[in-house]
Amino acid sequence: MDAFRSGADTLFILLGAIMILAMHAGFAFLELGTVRKKNQVNALVKILVDFAVSTVAYFFVGYGIAYGVHFFSSASVLAEKSGFELVKFFFLLTFAAAIPAIISGGIAERARFHPQLVATALLVGFVYPLFEGIAWNQRFGVQGWLEASFGAPFHDFAGSIVVHAVGGWAALPAVILLGSRRGRYTKDGAVAAHPPSNIPFLALGAWILAVGWFGFNVMSAQTLDKMNGLVAINSLMAMVGGTLVALVLGKNDPGFAYNGPLAGLVAVCAGSDLMHPLGALITGGVAGAIFVWMFILTQNRWKIDDVLGVWPLHGLCGAWGGIAAGIFGLQSVGGIGGVSLMSQLIGTLMGISIAVAGGWLIYGVLKKTTGIRLDPEEEYQGADLSVHKITSTPEREVSW
Image (cartoon, rainbow, N blue to C red; front, top):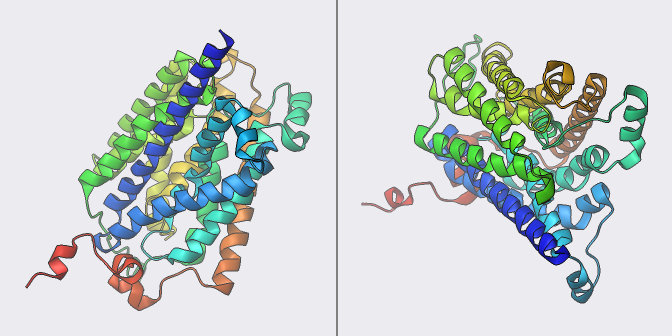
């Protein structure tokens, strides 16, 4: 029975890892559909290579920082470990690799390729694992202090803060340091439209992400005996709440409609194992509103050219999710309990602080040393030709 249980848990977490790996295709197509046509190839290549760099950085450095585990022993020694121990790395890697995938959407269309790979390695190797270890592995005694002080540790079941808020808030310094795309804002302050290149691909990316998210959330239990159907129902309700609110507030705009479910899913990650489904519905609905309002505000009022709106979507909705877990997780509002609003606030602020500091440091140093932005001619041509020497429709380039 022990062998059967171990094998079942290993298969369970492996399937979760595969579902989250598939979400990276969602990140790629969401970005591909949102950017202009001259930057589609760059979106696809960037997400794939970022994942590869993330794997190396997390394998050699990040996983050890977060969990104190390394793989620097012979294959025979590794083979003696349970399959679960080894596959768990794959599962947690897919979370870590979401950080550069999130950032990629914010800096699209004008970021240099190779400096971004350096940033990916540093973020996944050092910045992300620092907070991951604090939140999910009791590192540095922070969780113990929160529990002793406020009655419960910081709770983030599936990564509203650890993954999404960290990714979204690390993206904000990168977006600001890069500056807006050329022609996005005119000298008189007007906003020039840079419409999406392909709405069907944008929708495909959102659908892939939404489906994979049920592996992201449900399989964060990591073992079969801890799997809870409540997580699935709450994820569904938050997704629906985000969709409907974004549809209404976004005035039927498909970009808002398809990012609405993602906003809801981002927000529910933290408390999906604690909330009543009605609490999850409200959490998702509020997240949909946050995304629509803040996307419009950042783009049109503050002139922050966050191409996919990753700061509102992941940064702000993720932060809301951390706080919402401390509200709707309480027994007094129908939740399971075992959570403290004060611990949620402190944990959320800690994750944001680490992400912002890491983002400013890494992208600030890269900007001063190697540069992080394409030059005007390269940006005008598009990253596809400038970086990859081919467009998304190369047959047109060789036709007579």
